[in-house]
Image 1: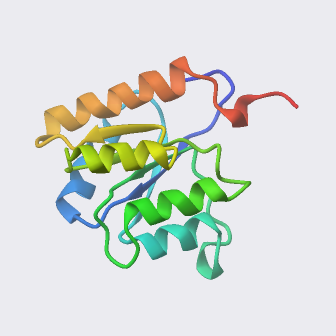
Image 2: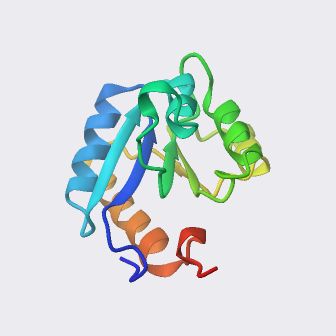
Length: 150
């Protein structure tokens, strides 16, 4: 993990499928870095968490957001748009983690400034590989805005 982050990495997983939530949490428990995963089961709850509404006022701001596209109430693209329009959140990496391989979804996600697009793995072993790739890239390789000095 980057030397600048000396605390658990805060991850917001926006996912409505309980099986995928289970696999993602299990994969990140096997990761080499300490992390806290917070889950929003729909787009509206995700935005409440991100904008620290009511019961989420004390929730840590995520270091990275893993966002499904197909969500109830507000879909992932709507959530991504609102994140990127918000001055305090727009630099937060948002990685689309979805089952969709549709070109339209990929193009639209990048047009809305997604940081990356990953098709959901189908088993735990592959979820673990994705978690490791996220760790290596986002927390060992790149410099995140919250690590910048002044």
